[in-house]
Amino acid sequence: MPCTVVTGGFWGDEGKGKIISYLALKDKLDICVRTGSVNAAHTVWYQGKRYALHMVPAAFVHEKCRLLIGAGANVHIAQFLEEVETTNVKNRIGIDHQASIIEEKHSMQDKTRAHLKGIGTTGRGVGPAIEERVGRTAKLAKNIPELQPYLADVAKEVNIAIEDGHKTVLEGTQGFMLSLFHGTYPYVTGRDTSASAICSEAGVGPTRIDNVLVVFKAFMTRVGAGPLPEELTKEEALKRGWFEIAAGTGRERRSSPFNFELAKKAVMINGATQAAVTKLDILYPECKGARNFDVLPEEAKEFIQKIEKQAGIPVVLIGTGPEALDIIDRRK
Ligand code: IMP
Ligand code: MG
Image (cartoon, rainbow, N blue to C red; front, side):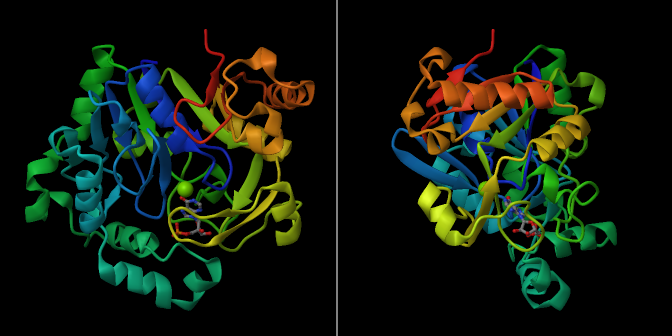
């Protein structure tokens, strides 16, 4: 804190939603800015209820947190309005007037263009919407009647908040290996997903950032096409308990063991200062619900220590269950 960028270290679905919801509650975040778009779903479990958020920032669980969607984001109007209802955040959420709009036609283009089908996009139309923005013909939030009550100058608001020492999180979406620039091109998303790009989408300069928290899962998963080192068969994934279904699209996720080389690369290019590792309890079931590092089995401790050694940064948060507060917090 005060300004932390939360970024995904692998292919998305590392558990950023869980980590951000924990920070929101524990640190009483003042402000959270979401970037990206509806292709990403951030899962938050709170008070026994599950939320799969495509638009609303995951910090909504702290009732005093101001929620913002940055100028670089792509807003799906119906999805936004629906989530505002289900999370009951109408009076504390804002959208930058220059955020662009994603429409049904973009989703159709995602699903019908052959090369995009081959990439296995989420089908939400984010790539085509970004193309339109690059072509400078996109619709912006400021031109949409239903969004008028939510319009904000997000860059200004967040920079003032940081200046005033308010606890701020910039919420990255998707994962580093899906970056248009640094990922497994062409099997990537339509934007850079690195910490620098998250800052840029929110309108915050690099000198304003105190922490870059990279989130890894204890094993890796990937949806859609593209390389995944040491990929397991579905059978093996089921046996290990690593088999997952995507929160956003219902697609099956492929899985593979934690890759230290990829983690190192993610730490380097994101300039990460700290790491979080989620789902440690899936790898080592004895860890389930643990809130203290000392009680972990030796094997689990060694795994975390190996990540720290190889990546060169401390693992400060460890997920041990789905609920927001199922976390070992090793921050000072
Ligand atoms: P697009 O972002 O919908 O264009 O999809 C491009 C690639 O990124 C596909 O392989 C998708 O499965 C993947 N992808 C996009 N967003 C996410 C996400 O939030 N989590 C996991 N994979 C994603
Ligand atoms: Mg997800």
